[in-house]
Length: 400
Image 1 (tube, rainbow, N blue to C red):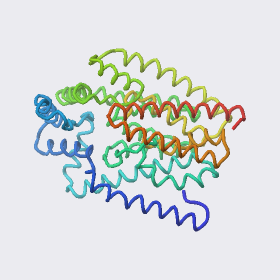
Image 2: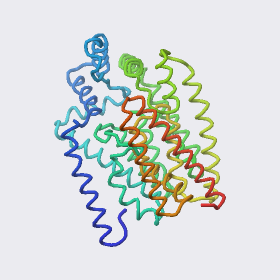
Image 3: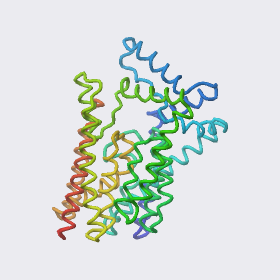
Image 4: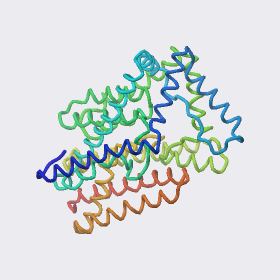
């Protein structure tokens, strides 16, 4: 990743050292691992011979029955990964706590660094000389916005790192089996991550069959669970439902933002969100398919296509969370840079990028309510994706 003169390499290495040094300082003011604590609670329930979903549901119901006594407290969250993940949790429970924790955080850091590294592969040689200085701070600004999700410990960071690295292997070597295995493993924890299966379909030839087979396998793994673990699966579905009804955790996809809006006006559930998702997901896929044909015909390079493709893939996820856009940070930055550099000279383009970055982060820091944060995340993701499509249209016409 680091190229150029010895002085440049030294400065970049210093930036990385400072980035890592900032984390222990940050931890002193913001306790890390809040998502990981949910996994620990489930692990402890299993060690006690309990149903982790039932234990989590009981905690949530008790909290919300007494909500009037502590209206400003953070609500508890429950383990909401399907029962097929519990055997892995049992393996972790059999290991010493220090060992399982150390292995997990090692994989977590590796996933974050892998996503940044893959994002840098989308930069051209001229862009890399600039973005190499931004890479060390990318993890602190997921989706270009200052947020603390880096410390969450969510397993998605591990899977996205693995998915992106195996996708890069597919792009460079034409070998996609490791990608499909990674996508299938990720779907056991987060079923919406099956949306990543469109990556090979939209960026390589003859991938429809293996992508569909993997998708069917993912759905099959999910469908067989109520037959194998009927009680656990029933409790899992209830825990998942409470994630929305109690915690209103819809995410910030277009469908998620509609869900927040409906909930805000007192509509707890509406099929409108599902209908809306299906309509825009089909339209989005058609748009991505159109650009993919242009890419496969050689109208633009993988470096140009990768940022737009991966942003589109995330937008196909019906429930986008901040850890879903965190791996896109470098790619979103590249899209913004390419837009401004296409309409202004380099020095002015850098200034415009800096002003854009400063403006969106000042806005989100001033307007602190959680709905404003999520709305900003969602709108920014859609705007940058649209700009990326505009960049591709210009590139296809030979303008950029």
